[in-house]
Structures are given as structure tokens and as C-alpha cells.
Length: 261
Length: 339
Image (tube, rainbow over all chains, first blue to last red; front, side, top):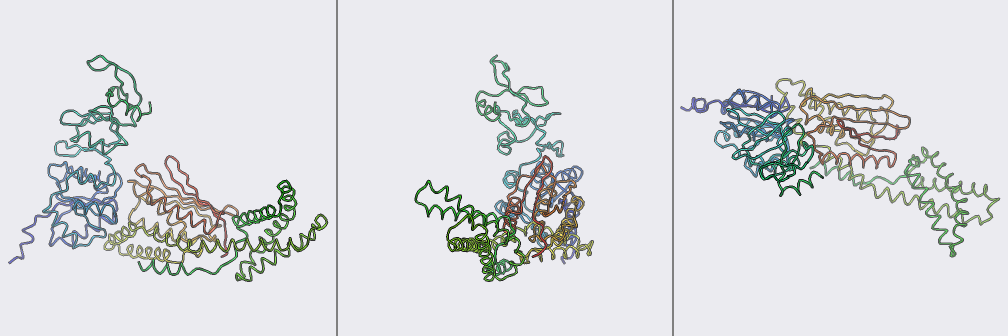
């Protein structure tokens, strides 16, 4: 008969619960226990925000993330975007108390979400579906995001390295990658300069076909002779960096206006 | 849905007309301006030659201002008695006061004014009637606004996010700590009772403070140690009558913008102080970098500012002070302890 079928059929899913409110995490743990019969799971960790969740993901393989959307430090949607860089991308189910905007976005993108307070039957359905459905593409998540990302992320040897957006002084396109420069070091981002420029128009300013600078880091502008042609160009000096960044002739009028020089 | 409809019915019912509060600064200023404007108009109508207007105005001022100031002073003194009268008797009483003052000032000023006896008396009564008519109209114009403000107050108050998060919090502790869950449901029902009561009745400040403590206790269920509260109360201010839900939405704002978006603990400071005839209330929260300005924030402030205006006219004020790391709402309102 089919008595033993349920347990044999499903390998327990490794679940990570992310919510900034302790009772909300407890509630999900209780519910996962209640539905263990039909949807066996094991909780491998609980985190209070996206950054904590990513730290937990370094040491654990996770099949499913249940995450709140609004959280301090890093929200749930940004977490899902960074998680997308892992070699084995876990399924993500969002939970939200009430957020008209987010709910509409989810429906448009056909991303699964649960309304808090969550019902056990609804949770079981969502988990069953998450076993089958592929996680949403980064582009969809980007459009749903209530706010800009707080971090860039890099997949370094199977783990995710976070770079706070606020620490980046400039971004330079180099062949296949974008180099993000902070005061301490350089990072190779797997993104396009155009996307970054579109996502953070208030933070970064284009000074060259291949270069964005952090508006807040600008220390000054000067005329300098760089490059091979021996002609004088405008260059930008950034706080805490010796390097001078050339402004292209085409971008100069826009840069001049943006910096008010 | 049904809650709102009931309110609407109760709100539009309108209340009987009543005399203006003659001790209110706004009422006093409006009376002075209106009577002077009427007197000016009378002088302009009476004189055909413009060069005589200035002299006429000076003469008029002697007669009008003297009795006007006496009127205002008499009504100020009689206010506690006048406010107990039903509206028609109140109107008769005010007219009586104006007549007595006019007769008295006539006899005092008689040596320097030999004009007719009857005309100034009629003029005083006519302008008093005009002023009362003005306040009657104003009251009528504001009655729907009051109901509207009350509706607004209700819809703005129940943030759906807050309700569902609180219920989720209760469910989260239900199994592990049933006592705490019970407590939280009691707090939630107290909050809803306050939200649904008649918001035109003033309540003692002490009651509003109790309500805020319950609200904060409910939020502590979800936010735990992240929510720190620093109360500085003044027992002398406890008896002051305030519009219901004056503080709670402001404290909710402080939690929503100053605590929730932060990862670590933060403090909401609430200071209440009686300063002579005024009560000063300050609500401060940390200003978090992550918070952009939400529309909801401004809506709650506009809402409260409008309600203060409806209840106290010019005698109350709401200001916002913002420093590099803190956001503070400050309210000043007159101390009143009788309805």
C-alpha cells in the first residue's frame, strides 16, 4: 500500500528561515513541524536579515529559503538576488504581512509568496510547488525590489562575498567583467556597467564609456596629460585614492553639470 | 467596512450649534478683526468725501474700540457660565452683555460725544449678531470636516501592516508562551476599542498614555529588545484633556521609521511636561540612514495637525525638529481639564 510512500518519496528539504521578528520565525518553525508528514523538512538555520542569512549559507547547503521581505540591513528580495549566484540556487518563498505593492509585483512575476499569518495548508502547497519550479530570474527580482541593493555580490569559490555599495569608489568595465574599486581592494563583478548605472543613478556618475564614479567620493577635477596621445584631458580625483580617472570628451559636459564645476 | 459605515452615520448626525469659546485666542482675534472691518465699512459707506474719512474713523474708533474691548473682556469672564447655556439662551445672553456694555460706555463717553443714543446701540447689537452668525456658519462648515477628520483618523490609524504583523506575533508565541499571547490579544483589543470610540470626545492625557504603553508592549512582542522606550512623564499634565489618539499614531510613526528599519536596538523618547497654562509633548526617535521619507509619515502628521486645529484653533502647535541623528515631533497645547 501507499503508507510508506510519502516518507520514501521526499527527501527532507533543508530550510533556512529568515525574518527580523523572533515570533514570526517561531511560527514558521511550528508550522513546518505541523506539515512534516506531507512535506518533510529540516531547519538548518534561522536568520534575522539577508546578511545573516548569507553568512549561514556559507557553511550549509540549503534547498529552500523562507524569507520576509521587509527587514533591516538587507531585505528579502535582495537576499534572493545574491543567492542566485550560488552554484546550486535554493528555492525562495517570500513571506509578507501586508504590502500591496509587493503582492502585485509577485503576481505579475508569478513568484510564490505567503501572506502572514501563514496557514499550514498554504505553506505545504508552496513547498510542494517550490520543489518543482525554478527560482525567479535576477531581472524579475530586480524589478520587484522595493529599494536598491545595499550590496554587490561576488561568487568566490562557491561562497558569496558581499561588497557594500557605499564602499565602492568607482566601477570600470574590463572585457568580460566590471571591476569595483573600494579603498582597500578591487572586486570583479559579473554585471554590466549599464545595469549598475540604471539601478543607482543617484550614487554613480558616468565619466567615460567604461567608467562610473561614486558621486560622494569626488575630491576634485583637474587638467592632466594622460594616455598616449599627449593631449590634456580632464581627470577626476577621488577621496582616498591616488589614481586619477580620465573623463571622456563626450561625457565632460554632463560631468561638469553634475558636479557643478 | 461596517465599522466605517457606522462611523459615517454617527459623524454626519451633526451636533447642536453652540457658542464659540470666548477664551480661545483665535475666537478673540477673529471677533476683533470682524468688528473693526464692519466699522470701517460703515464709515466708508456713510462718507462721500474721502478727506473726511480719516477723521470719521478716529471718531468711530473711540466709540467702537472702547466698548469692543469691554465686550471681549466681559465675554471672556462670563465664558464658564455662557458655555452651559443652550444655544438660543446663549445668544440672548451675549446680546444682553453687548447691550449692557454699550449702554455703560455710552454714559461714560457721553461728555465727549453728543451723537444720538439709539444708533450706536443698534450698531453694537447688529455687529454682535454678525459675529455670532459668522461663528455659527463657521461651526456648521466645520462639522462635516470634523466627521471627515475622524474618518481619516480611523483609516490612517489602522495600518494593515501593523495589524497583520501583530496577529502573526501572537500566533508565534501562542504555543511557547500562551500567557504572553493572551496579554497581547488584550492589548490589541484595547487598541481597537480606542480606535472605534467617538473621537470628538476629549480624553484625559493619562488615558492616552496608558493606551500608548499598551501599544508599545504589543510592538515589543515583535521587536523584542530592539525597541527601547524612555518615558518622561509629568503628573501635573495627567489631567489635561486631549483629542483621543493624539500620541499613539506619532509613537507608531517613531517605531515604524526609527526602530523597525534598524538592525540594533533604538530608543523612542517620550517627554511630557506641564509648563504653566500649556502642555508640551515631545516624541523623538533615532533617524536611520536607511529610511527614506514615506508618505505615510507625513499623512499622520497632517492628520494630527488638522485635528489639533479643529480642537484648539490657534492655541496648539505641532513642530518637527530634525537633527543629524534624531527626529522629534513637538506638540504644544493648552492645559484644559474641564470638558
